[in-house]
Length: 330
Image 1 (tube, one colour):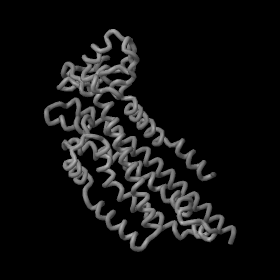
Image 2 (image 1 turned 30 degrees about the vertical axis):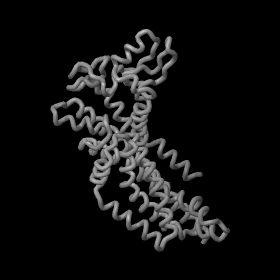
Image 3 (image 1 turned 30 degrees about the horizontal axis):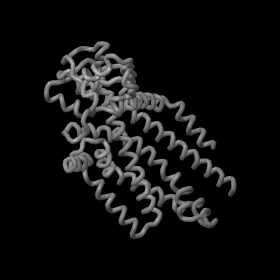
Image 4 (image 1 turned 90 degrees about the vertical axis):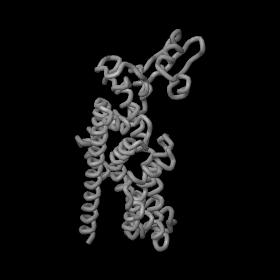
């Protein structure tokens, strides 16, 4: 508990951790509540035809445009989002900042604030989904290979090394070219197919490292099953570096998605699509996308660096305590 308390105290007093967590929390809130911040349809409306809640999410086909939404609810009582324009709504082109358009519009008349908010959802949803798939799949394979060893270790280790030799952007672009689905989930699976190898190799190395530790041998001597030894005594130590690796993987996945979308293989409405518009002379959208990417990537690195430093200090403190205890015992 003492080392855990020191870890929490060190994190709570870290300026990098507070700054990174705050910026990431703002992006996460914008992604989750995108329809409350910018959308064509109202958040909630009630009238003669009943109550409608978040129609932009549950009934998007009934609200093809902002004009259609206003006509549909002109006689109803409605609560509208902060900005009454969706990412694909067309207004007057190249308008400056105003209450209706907080960041103005691009050369096609699309609201830049709405495009940034909904682009944050695509970026964070992809990062979380891809990391979830990669961490679960990679951790299971790495733990199995490191604990069992022998033939099965080679079966897992060699494909992992093969996957890591291919550039991630090439693999994802090829998968998207073969399966040109615009859904986030298909891109998340493609990214996870590249990222799992790094997690598997890391978990495998940590399982091999702690597999011969004294506390693991003691658990085996007391009659603990292999599954219990792996789950309760080895994986908690092996997953610590995985947490730091996953945090550092967030900005790389966000940048990978932006690069793939820039090439035309990504998700519709992402920040990478905004970057690609620079070729047509539309400088406002790429500039907003660059600033958003910089803020999100920078905050992710700050948080990952703070957590990694705190974990390293915790491990070092635990090692010093164990060394001191062995010295006193001797």
